[in-house]
Image (cartoon, rainbow, N blue to C red):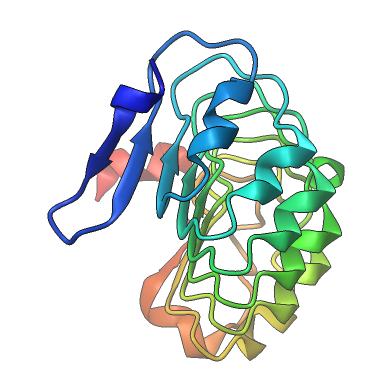
Length: 189
């Protein structure tokens, strides 16, 4: 199954695509195929990602969206080449995101939308290459001002959170993509 799922992308990257396969557990057999640039385990029913995810040392894109993940392993911080991490549409809380995620110095895109996150994890402040941060449809009631110190952040999506609309935070460096409208307002634009 997994061996045939490794494909070469147009730009020459090796992609292991195990999306939409109704998997409930992480298939250990894919550890033999850990020399891939992209790993897609999205649209399954995974509840846990094992520590052995750190075997994918060359992975640049890790797509875990639309599973049932409540937490990620600490070992995810060892994926030093990771540039794009998609964990959208899971069951993550602020406490289910390990602080080791802050070690991913090459991370450029982080999608944590559609989870149960109540506060923006402070270790994100160390992700200096981060250009896009997706936090839409969570439980955020405030946006930390330190986000404006991320030098490459140009996209911040916090739509559909219970944020105060009458007193939005002042984050000038990223205001061009500031997305804070209430869900109900979106149909009126």
